[in-house]
Image (cartoon, rainbow, N blue to C red):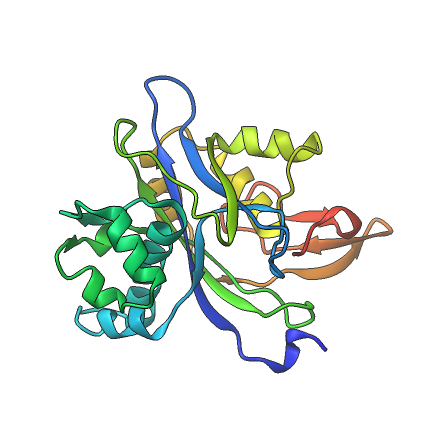
Length: 249
């Protein structure tokens, strides 16, 4: 049975960029537990599905409710998975907040004491896999956010993820190419795009220069090889990969 009969599940991912005095910005990635059905053992950006609490809090803000709920989900997931309060000021007890979220307290109640800045998240991409995959299909919105170099350190949750690290986009790609890490097809494409960008400001400019529309990969035979492809013109330097080498989660 595949995910073809299921409706896509709204989800959100947050790409946090930490700029340094010299060199490319570092990105926060987490390693999924090998036991997880989706992307088990792979390096991914923190994120997850949009839940009813995210939608309830989004309803209190003006704007596109789906986009707002996804931004809130991305902020919540970052707290849960890495212990970072991105887009929130005034959150002193981040571990207490994290524990409350894991305990099932609605995100609106947990964040009531903080100053929520949804504009701190910049839309970067949106990926919607085809329905022929063997796992649940997530309609995932990707956002960019800045994290100061001297701010609090991230702490792995030890639940869905087993470790986290800060690394440049190229370093993660190099680790994958050397067989030291696993990255799924959308993550690889996003890393290749981010590896071209030398700062958070460049990443924001790149995001705003390209349309953010659902990217659904397809299989096409080119030069006698079956390749997994994505559309041109969305900011990605590599738009196809031999399907046998692509990790599709």
